Image 1 (spheres, helix red, strand yellow):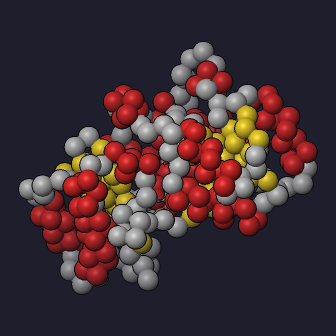
Image 2: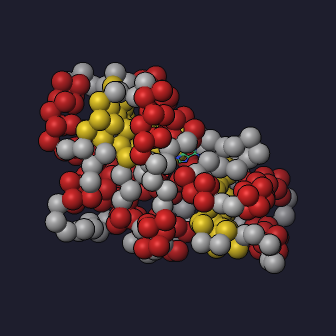
Length: 281
Ligand code: AMP
């Protein structure tokens, strides 16, 4: 496994692969878990070389405290990557990617950037677009893998590729969960024992939403979810929405021909957790 911190040297190394059309890329912010590894194993099926980047991107954090407290476990990450036979790891510094200024590019993602995560994390998707574009330009992957755990981000990246015409296939990967249903997330390690024990409640709420969808109104489901979190001892609801998978516009009623998903964001103290579920079959 080769580890690069310099843009120039990783570019040189990947030159020969660019001719063979088989670079798979998995961008991450580190603190790796099985969810990340599931993306890597999918990438390994289809590509000659798999590149994983580890970069905690400052421009996508709207909350400086969240950036400060984001888990960083580089030694353990490298051991995990070695164990799954990852080929290339790219760990640039902030200066390496952004040079002197943390300049954020402004994108028009056609409106999906203003829904849900975009509403509650101002500027988040410009930060995501900026860093993903930079990484795509350096790695020049043929295939890039993103988790449905961050479903809105996946749709944003697909839009980014459409706008910029960067020639890369974007592959969405299923959400990987703990055995009790909690969606794996780097932030889960920050939960205390009691919060962690209670956390499957988030996924349980989504599963029950799926059962109720099409039987009772969207409004009634939203009221039910809000009630579940009222006075909850551990979790505070930030938002719950049922939205069309493509436009990400929240809906008031269900029109059969669309694919819908339920999206949720909750806080356990200052730890922000998100999850979502397809409401189709
Ligand atoms: P992150 O390090 O949180 O930025 O995540 C890097 C990539 O891994 C993103 O494409 C995430 O959507 C994906 N990812 C994170 N957690 C999971 C999970 N539990 N299941 C599947 N993909 C995930």
